[in-house]
Length: 518
Image (cartoon, rainbow, N blue to C red; front, top):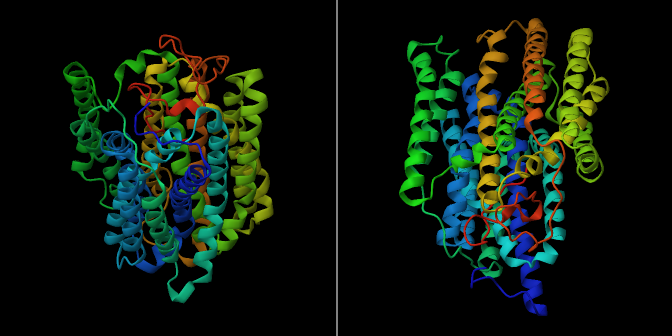
């Protein structure tokens, strides 16, 4: 461990580290809420700014793309220059970007501010679990990571509700803007208290930055996602098709460069040798495509309820409560009871269950049309939420279970980055699967609900098809989970290890490389 790891004995030190924990957990909560809070306010933003469909997608996809592109680099910067320093820089940038979002006068400013916000989050979030790892001894980390899991669940549940309330209340006539401005007092408090209570730490043998790798992967994603989001508005121009066709070539250049970077100094952005592990390669495919599923569903669901059905933000937000509760309940059961007994069949059951929920939703949307009520949506949402909970909680452990210990940190970072990339890609695909069935010109008032309901059903068929593909790819995951090893019991780096709280153990000298728990 680094010589800068803080002591954890004594009353003062004990109080100091728990305050530090509260600070970083609050920052993590702020980021998680910010991801979910925006979706519910999208229709209000669209009306207030007159935003195009493409801008609507970029308000959400831009954040996910910037976050994904900077996630691994943000963790590495913390290892090199200090995790406290990067956390404070990140929370400062996130707070400033939130203010810019809240006061944005037009869609262009809002999209640019969201990109900045995602970049700042990529600096801040990876430091959270790394700070926890070096602040708390091994025997306490289980309890601490349990608290982190509770924060993740609370963020998922409270984000849409908070967004709905803030939008519905229209505080000071600001409409949707308080969903961003609420971050200001939280961010300022986190900055002031973080400077005082968080102890600095660095990795003694931190890897070097791979900025060329970051640039290449970001360029490849932009060449794919930007034409998807803008193509329909611009009548699918030739340059858009050329960009999308050329994006695989950019990714091929990225792979070649990563191989060169590995030979040169052993510090690539992506550890390509990990893909030789079949379960990891399959898990990355699952993570990417599952991110696509989430990116498509949550945006079109919000648009369907608020624009298609004309529901208020609060009504739409409350409708999603059964979904969030089902996710949390199923996630707890899957990890504690089901996965140890049934292995990957639990994850596959989750994908089948989600498909069942989607089919029920498609049937109800068709049967009840624009007269559908929130209580009628409860059944498909509970079924879908249960399926999602069976997947999201055990997926990371299943993917990491056959990864050698020395690469656990790199693999964890890559899993989370891939999920964010999938989310951005899914948001880009909304142009094809949802807006592709809606005219850019607003339909006649009496036809809006019917058109949006049809587009919603069309989108759900796409989501169901992707989940069927996920089910098949899951056969490459380990049939049974590996036995969990206690901290310090897995000194042999050649042995695969399934990691939970110890996922933050990095590749360099036992120091942590940050990981964002999904």
